[in-house]
Image (cartoon, rainbow, N blue to C red; front, side, top):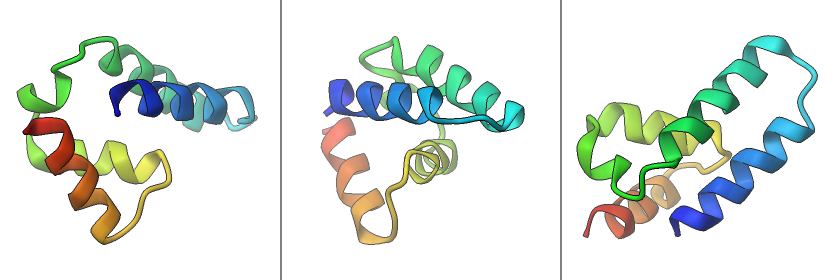
Length: 69
């Protein structure tokens, strides 16, 4: 799953012209370099990252659970 998130972040970065969003995606990519990053961060930050990558609602919870268990 973490590899899928890395690919999504890279695709979003490549297709983005907004500098603020580009900076956000660059930061997300840097965070995702650590395979265990979701186990180390606050749940609110984790959910925000998943939302920034385009996931919504129950999908965010399901993916988060998959990443930490």
